[in-house]
Image 1 (cartoon, rainbow, N blue to C red):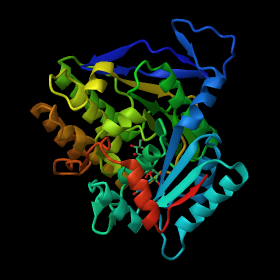
Image 2: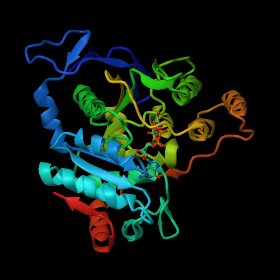
Image 3: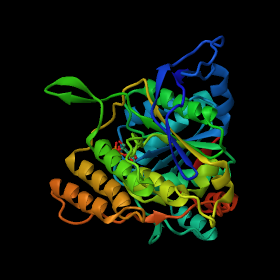
Length: 389
Ligand code: GDD
């Protein structure tokens, strides 16, 4: 792969956030020598990373065809962890997802795991390691973020060093395959073991008057990025436009970073990751919970894909819900100032929401959690977990 070398960056405390780097070629020659402008990721590097990587696929009642395409696009040496919140009553979608996953495993022997988010065994497992933040009543709460945390803990228990997230409703399997390579390119470029890679779509096509229009920015991303950049301005006193991936559903982390991150419930999870990084690592503090990360530094790469992103559109109410969740992470941040909050309330008003955006439910880091014990207890109590090795 060839991509633009990381050049421009915003440095905020221990955080280095690189500006967008475009993917220029998906396959590169072994003979290519890096230049100050262009970085190459040789083919064998991808193969080195695959067995160390888990791809977590959250799913809730998506088209089974799309789900199958996504799974088929994940390279064979990568461990796939599917966390589903799909219907089990009536037409048992979960059962169908499991059958698709098993069929792919049967012919490929790829390590693949599937679990239902509402599995009662999860309650026992989370209680056994005293990590009850995502429980509600007898099971784990609904929400994409909650599904991602389950996947993370399983990946941690398996000793995997990197985790990436891929939505299950992607129409283009080759795009999914590229996203994974983009993640690895970020890990390969990084000189820190605390690395995050967030993807920005080259285009997000939409059907307008019965033909495809290749949009550059989605509505939610445009708004979230604008306010996220203002938040950085609050912190540093300098205006910036560095953030282009405020809502990056497709993103990846080294496990060392993933473990020390706090998360937010539902669709607030991706914007909150940035807010958390600003709050926790955005200033050099004498007292920090994470000294090693502070001294090594945290790198955030934003990579612009070559493929367009074509996924299921979920309607206006869903968009408003995502905007509110995203702005809520910024509005309630301790680094936001009053004038930023006033602007956010005005923005919400334009979408017909008359109140302040919701405060995100925060899920603390999993760093102290005994993940092996979590998985053992889960295996003893589960009704849905299947691990195909
Ligand atoms: N396990 C689980 N549990 N998965 C869920 C849940 C849940 O409660 N809710 C949604 N998902 C899955 C969906 O099936 C899909 O695979 C993925 O999470 C994303 O959900 P969508 O509903 O398709 O979200 P979106 O496409 O509007 O937004 C995506 O892109 C945004 C950036 O543009 C998401 O990835 C957002 O998180 C992201 O901010």
